Amino acid sequence: MLLKVGELARRTGLTVRALHHYDSIGLLRPSGRSESGYRLYSRDDVARLHGIQTLRRMGLPLAEVAQLLDGGTVTLPALLARQIGTLDQEIAQGQALRERLGVMQMILVRGGQPEIDDWLASLSMMSTFEQYFSAGELKLVFERWKRSEAEWPGLLRAVRDAMERGVPADSIELQPLARRWMDVSARWMNGDIGLLNRWGSMLREQPSLPLPTGMDRALLDYIDRAVQLRLAVLAKYISADELQRLDKTLDPEWRALGERAERLMIDGVPPDSTGARQLAREWQALLDRMVRHDASLRTRLLAAFENEPLLRAGAAFTQDVWRYVWQAAALDPHAT
Image (cartoon, rainbow, N blue to C red; front, side, top):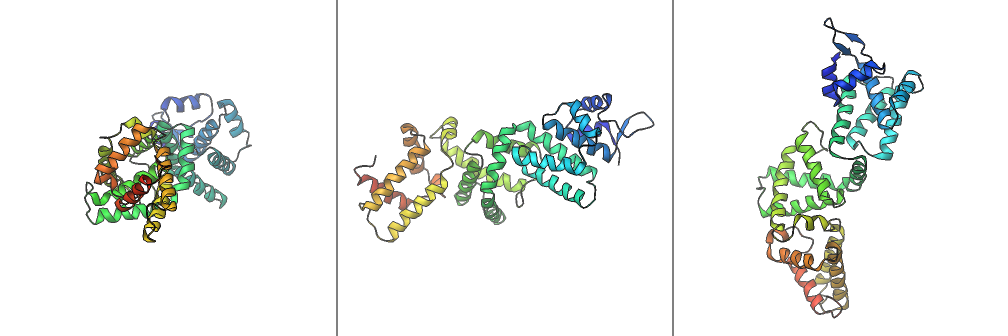
């Protein structure tokens, strides 16, 4: 399989001008020419291009790239191993890219050769990620993905089950899953709504990007409608800037506190007990952390959850627990 320069540029995310430049300086000369004089690139040429781009992303100038590749000091398996090592340190090109490179390395160890489509897909994915995120942002995204990865399969199965059962995206029945989706997504992105929105834009604008197992774009569209409904209700009480300021990584602590409150209620512990009043103080301290100690934001957020059944759906605290904690707080002279 031979590729013309335009096709190679299109499939790798590079420019024709860059490929011409690589040819002119002897860094990447095409293996052949068509009868009309068009440059034709082979699988080996694409593999060399992959090596060029790998070394360039490591910060090497073109002159040193040429010396490394032409001097024989970097073999193809070693080059892949070096790139994977860099990805492990920088986590800048994404988990899907790393997995693909790992497969290619395994093929090389067994004595095989990656096909031209493997090289092309890897190069294209690098270019796509870099359109939306800096290296530092990608490092954060993929480091934190490892922390929340185990939470996604169960959530994806639950969302797909609701979708297949025909639960309307705008129904309150779907809101607990929408809230879980928002929580896991927010903790994945360290609470950065802007980063999360850009990730969503990338998935919508780049339909060829692979998705995690169990996720597809129909499912994403379905749960996104429920999430947007929740955000629209919340927007009646707080601004987009205030939503960004909220600490959205505290849901595990909220749920642990809610479970403690439920145990107290089941055990018949009255709201004026020492344990219940201590829990109320912890609840208010956690709320203060969530709103970054902004009293106005705290008041409006509480009003939103008190007035909007849709927001209460799926919350860490049921209405009974909510009332119990409020009663304990009202009876605690140290609570605010």
